[in-house]
Length: 289
Ligand SMILES: Cc1ncc(C[n+]2csc(CCOP(=O)(O)OP(=O)(O)O)c2C)c(N)n1
Image (cartoon, rainbow, N blue to C red; front, side, top):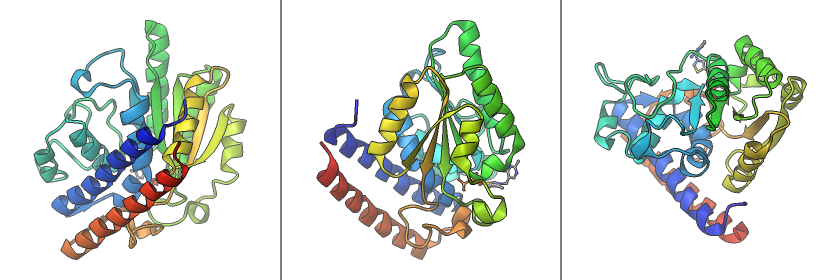
């Protein structure tokens, strides 16, 4: 069922708080992967607040849904999300990326409750997610697995090996989402390593491809519902996003893949994110039903 206006508003609030907490944590840590965190915030919000069968109070439940954040450099966004969900203390975020902290810049699933996989070395998450999905089949479990990939990450051959196997095994309980922000660490994807025709590539690998605006919770939600119901072919959602979305000096600037946020930048960022949130609320008022 499509998002109601009420649900949409409530998810917008969670996403806005998550963006602000990512910025705050980056300020505490001194630096962080803000660009790719901000492009994924809406996707993560919908997964953890709506579509995943995931109760933070019972995150050891073997039947709950799984999520593999293969673009593991956004440990910043996951740690902030997990703090919002009560899986880790907000105070703990103050240690993010500091020596001796349980919260490294790439999170370790042995140290963070509720985190399904340790990622950070790009290209590994797809095969992990497929393995987790096939394990459900073997064990007769009903959980779904969500996989979040970066588009630059799709330069890794292992992504395509796993994609080929995913459609070969008709693993429709594995839902792939690509954060298509068209940027990577040091430039635009199309200039570093051409990905287009990107959707056609996924189609050729046996996927049903849905392309959406990755910053429109309503569109994204419809795509996720479609993907969850699909039983013929695995679905790949290409979420068109903007790296650094919501902060004026970061949006669309690959140099903000990773960076430091001093007090000035922090204050401007906070203000930008508040204005961005207001714009999004206005959209929900206009388009929500
Ligand atoms: C195997 C591997 N090679 C290189 C890196 C360094 N690295 C970290 S993030 C990144 C760019 C990834 O781009 P993308 O997947 O588009 O991420 P996003 O723009 O969404 O942050 C690179 C090359 C890595 N983490 N792992």
